[in-house]
Length: 180
Image 1: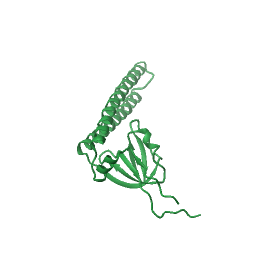
Image 2: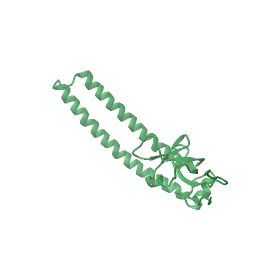
Image 3: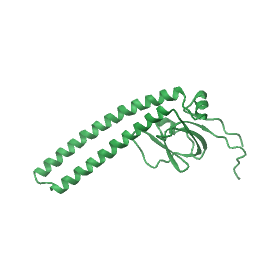
Image 4: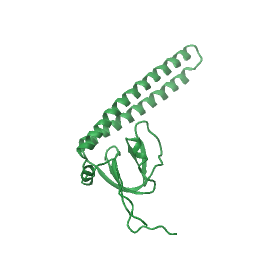
């Protein structure tokens, strides 16, 4: 069996050298800052759209309750659900942005080894998921998901607060043979 080729994902040799020491490189910090800025702009737009939609739904519910199409308890229930969804979504977006800022400030990287799977438990509008063993990690760049081969063993460099994978390298397994 021929040895597996060396595969590096989303990192230069300098990035990997720093990551192996548990640190982010300057280039990775700059890329993370770019992602944070983009994410904050996108989240602001999404929150504005959600507030606009909530205003529209609230107006419709109020009008329908005034003309007695909707009963007041049902109207209140609809509004409580809307407020709950908005609070959950806003806090989730804010928490993820705050975790990215913490990661940028700490400049630390966690090293994880495991087999990957592209199967994602859930989707998110701002990141993509990658399953590694029993954990799900995040990728900020959609093109990186396709670079991981399912079932292969990788050494991943993950931001500790947000769980975002910033770099990875394929680990060649020595002496591994398939039974024929």
